[in-house]
Image 1 (cartoon, helix red, strand yellow):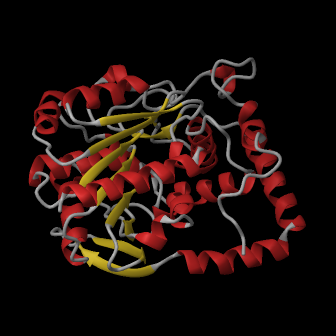
Image 2 (cartoon, rainbow, N blue to C red):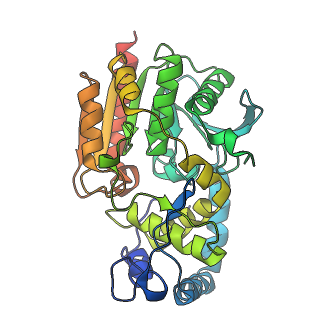
Length: 360
């Protein structure tokens, strides 16, 4: 069995793949070292424009890896099919199809994992391989526009907080979840916020915000946060932008195999969806008001080395929810659930158990 959470001995490989093309270095981001110009309403993973040499280098590395590990790759694909969980499709109120997955003990405490921007449910592999799925009923879904869910072409399908709140409500109802703990990474935390603003916390057992800019103020955006994407960026540029964004998501680098896998599901989200999502935000004052009304247990998890969403964002959430517990992950960046999965899983399991005790 392939252990998807295992680190290779060359954990810095993804950094080397990207080191040639970081903004501010002597080779620059593109011709003349200029970054792409911001355009109104156009947001995605871009931090710089591609140079063809970088893509060629990445292709060579991927080809070499495929040549060396064909047998291992076939085994990994087989193992992945086991990790998918039981899939069912549900329809949001606007008709958008959402792919939902389930693992674990149907009678155990309920946990819903919600991924971040341009990701998929597969980002939670370290949790799906842990005791969480042995002791809990775990549900995850691909957000609209992501993974195996539908990708509406109308930008309005991604605008306004109501659609995101309704998506969570649809999943909870379809699965018959009574008092689940919602775990939201990055943008996943933002749509949990939308659920709280629309539906409140009466149907929830607890909330875990993970590396999330729940309160949307510019001061909380780090240098690795997604930037506007030019409309005329080439496919090669989109690939390089996704690589750069992923590199900024980790303080402790993943194995090269894990990085390639994440790049795959990032690229599945089309630029039109990224731009539409980038045009959506929620008033910070309204968010603070909603957070102050939360009564269920709240855990705020954040890496101290996060350069996508700055640590101050976690402090702001904790200040708005007086009973919230703040857990810092030293040395971790934007993905503490991957970078220190054993500790994250232990803390999440303990939190889920405490929430189950609190609702009795």
